[in-house]
Length: 229
Ligand code: DC
Image (cartoon, rainbow, N blue to C red; front, side, top):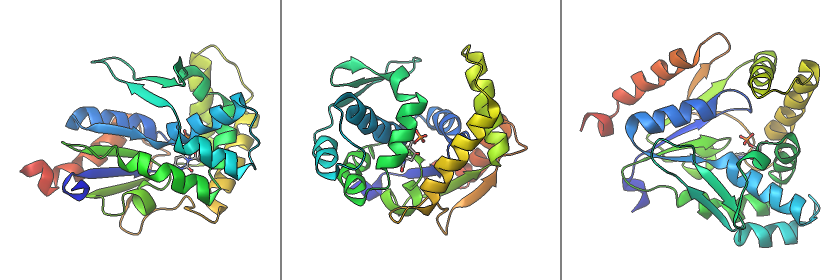
C-alpha cells in the first residue's frame, strides 16, 4: 500500500539547507514532511535526559522502540515537537543533542529500531523525506531523489549566520571543526553511511540561494507523472 504513495527524498550532510528546502517543497506540494534527523535527535535527547550512555545499545533500542514522540502541526505555524509530553524544539537543536544523535546513529540496532517509525510518515497525498539515508535505505523506491552538497566552509558560514540571528556569537572555526567531525562520522559509519543514492540528483548548493535550489528541485518535480496527473 505504502508504495502507491509518492515520496521525494532529500539527503545530504548537516548544514546544507535540506531542512529549509524540504519544508518549502512539502508546503508547495501540500505533502507531509519527515525530518528524520529530529527522530535521531529525540532519541539522543532521551539518552541525555535519562543518563543512558551512547554505547548502551540495549537501553537505546528499548527507548527507540517506545519513543514517546509527538508532532503537532497547526496551519501556518512551526511544528511543535513533544517528547515525553514536553515541548523540546529548542533542546533538539542544541549542539550537544546533534553530537549525541550522530554518535548513536552509527549503531545498526538503533537505526533498525527507528526504521518503521520513519516509514509510517508515508501518508497520502505524499511525503517529502529529509535526512541522510532517505533515498538509500528508508525509501529506496522513492519517485524522486535529491542529494544536496555544499563545502564545509560554506555550511559553517550558514550555521554561523543562523546562530547570529538568534543572538549567539559562536566561533566559526569551532563550527567548522564540528561540522567536519560530524560529516566524517556520518560518511564513514558502517551502516547507512551518508552517500548519494545512485539515482539521486546531486545539487551543489555552495553558490546557490535557497530560491535557486528550490527552483532546481521544483523543475524536476514538475517533470514527474504524479505532478502532471
Ligand atoms: O539532520 P540532523 O543534523 O538533525 O541529524 C542529526 C544526526 O542524526 C546526524 O548527525 C546523523 C543522524 N541522522 C542519520 O543518521 N540519519 C538520518 N536519516 C537523519 C539523521
